[in-house]
Length: 264
Image (cartoon, rainbow, N blue to C red; front, side):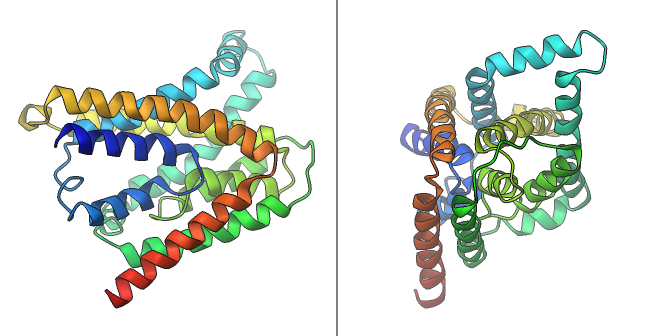
């Protein structure tokens, strides 16, 4: 993999991890554009590094909230921080179950399934459109809503369904405050990313990977920097009810993907 391809993949990962446009869907489209070679031959190490970069960017953006949660947990008593952590754990269960129970079936979904990506992007578009029209409230995330949000996150494993779009839209449609919805959506994915990274590291033999160091560094930096930008930007967009723009974008890209797959 060259430096340019690594840069492009890093930017795609950094932006689409947080913006509600589906990182998996865009990576599938990028695979098709690159002739199914660059990403197909991309090393597991590069994948781990790109996801690690976006996880770190999330930690940087929410460093104060994460610090409060950790300090609250170390008080070893039931408080707001402990309750929030339990909600995060509850939200992780559906995605973790799907990832473990249907890992082989999931791999089939990421084999140049551009038609599927197109339809799922249109579904993402609809979710974002209706969420943007929902009334603003001040409700917080409850234990039951955390499970529902977790189910939305599990469904977002499908390429073309945006994880952040699905979870934030689900929150907003349930009447949860938009800023709290965005905060919860981004924080709930950090343990999953770190857990997936740890699993990939344990399951893979990196001694056989021939990815040069420079592309990996370039990809990591690109994903981290664009992740910082996208995460901060997304918080403002959700608060100011600007999801419709992404709804239109997802609909256009989804339609183009479907037409291209059916007629070209």
